[in-house]
Amino acid sequence: MFAGWLVLAEFLGVLVAGAVVGVLVAGILAPLLIRPIYEIAARLNGSPFVPGDVVEVLAGHYAGRVGRVYSTWQGTSVRVELGELAGAKYQDIFGQHQLRRVRKIPGVPPN
Image (cartoon, rainbow, N blue to C red; front, side, top):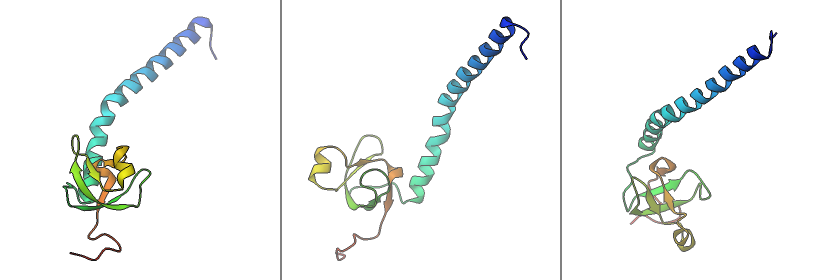
């Protein structure tokens, strides 16, 4: 298949260069494509969330838990009431795309 070492070296050089260019292009384009997808998902789930909103956690260790947003955080992130331990360890911080708005807290009568 290869006529000599020089042809093999050229082939491997083109292969490595193509992989490097692919990684660089993906690193530039991925954030441009993924961010709008996260924003659309967040909007479909009821964002923007503000303190007082009742939300369900969709991702992470607390997935499925329902709590009330009690504070905004850096950027568009919010903090959700999940207990003192979660708050002390900063495990109660979620991006808008990781939450879904719910109408009421299960087991708690409406005000």
